[in-house]
Image (cartoon, rainbow, N blue to C red; front, top):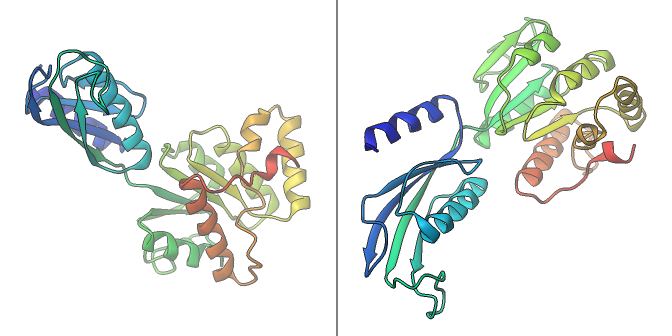
Length: 268
């Protein structure tokens, strides 16, 4: 295939805000199957376009590319193509190959449903941490660029309808902090079945139990309910809006790096 085809596909993936890895062979020696300059595109599902030489080498590269995508971290990997050498990958042809796995990471979005007093410091912290912040509310006097100067977008309208129409990807972190129980549940119903990286909802334990009970009665899958972080935020004794925002962002970061397993929905 032509490199132009590969780069055209890469551009499509970037425009769709997908995280992919562009693998380039940078050096080979001996009987390595690929040659310097060979390229291959790998997506988060392990689908590929192009080649770095095929065979066991390519399978190993795909595995390492998937790990790099999960970690959102580019790296150089070297492979010894000799089953008898330490660190070899079991091939008898001999030689070595080095590849550069360049992760093109989609922006991570912090989608905040509700533009109240907690949302303001949360949006500011999200922007500092590199998230693209989007705020949704049905009140224009609350949801605007003056109150949320660091937000990429402030969307005004019916919260449930906007969430239903929103492009939610595995790079989306959803925080539900609307002004009332009914709005929170409506927002959760629209997002619980998405492939968002994180879904969290504010509220007391009693309120959360009530919402989850209602979701079960409506037929929502138990495994989907179990992944919701509610009550939202790490227990750090937060009292003020700013402290609550810190607890939410701490939980999101912990979840992002696999450090948190607090999912109240599974036991409520």
